[in-house]
Length: 503
Image (cartoon, rainbow, N blue to C red):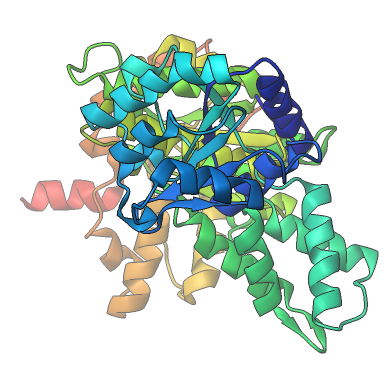
């Protein structure tokens, strides 16, 4: 895995030294990649012919040495009329030690003629010391017939040091005094995860003579991140104080977020079991490929994570979303469903692109929090990657419900006698207060429009408790969750018994 620009340059130079003929460079900024390619020539940029092909301009020289080379290869032909297949055919006539940069190759390499043209250059370029560089989007996967012949390199997104230089240069270009160290750090934090060009543009648009608007910079970063399919930056302002109960998991996550090697981003995966259901059995192979990619990525990065399991409405998602706010770091919602495509390769490309963004935003330190309503379908090998444990969220106790009522009574400005809330979840308490506020009715009246999950999913809750007892950590109390004898399921609240008898 390439982590820095210097490492990318080092590997590229090594490939040139041993006459590697075919390279695939995955990059979010093709202009930056082209610059690095020219920089890798060790001062020989004017003697090594570097030619670029793209669908609109055809073949064009990237330096003076390539002009004479192109004139000889093209003869009288207009370079703008050269298509992708022709470019690969003509490349065989280029001078020794030439470099041909093929832009957006992933848009063309599934054409049999283009794939064959790439492969045909392998042995010829090896003998002449030339190189074909395929510039592609992050995460792009090579066609099967080329996968063993092409060296794949990932250009890393700018590091914190790279972004610090961009911040300094942009301030200087705007004729604004160099930012104070704390301002510079906040700017770099807000830019992590962006490639050089959008980082520079976002920074410039957030600058004024009065200084840097950090919040505006963060918003521009969110917009750029959300261009990646399946990624969105959570904008809610929830905190642990807004969640009643669940004291054990809140205390644990607080310690993780404030401890050594603290995460720089929280990645929230909702209902993860649905994203990976069918792994190993889906006929398309999409789920299996995505699972393999995810397993490899988490293992390579030693990424930490927790799984939160329990009945619907027991604050699993609320805890996950509040974790980032508690630490003052961004929370990225990771939607596997939005990354899936009917084509195996396309889904993998989207997932790898999203993971590259997470890697850059977190500088390699991410905390994954996945919620789950049924853990049985989650692949065991994936569960093992969530090394910080699995926490079970039971229905809230009487004391926890009292705390939850206080939070939502204050939030919605309602008061009065409370209904019988035995077996209610926090989500149901919230909805009771919300309905009472919106409909201008009493809390007991509002309760008559709520059917708690303890009634509608009684058997599922019983099964979850039995599955979790003695195996998963408790979200509320220290230690392992233990089912309480004689209290497998709560009884229905009074409002529902009244409705039942009235019916």
